[in-house]
Image 1: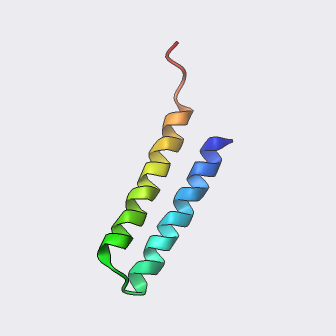
Image 2: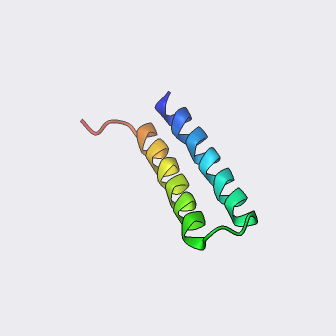
Length: 53
């Protein structure tokens, strides 16, 4: 469940980054959105790994 939510969040953040880039907003803001999207993807992927216990 959380994996799906995080992947959806990543999609929204990536779309926001693209939108901000097209609006010629500050580059730091666009990069921040891309970084947050990547972090959401990584977190979602980590949740799919089996428990090591």
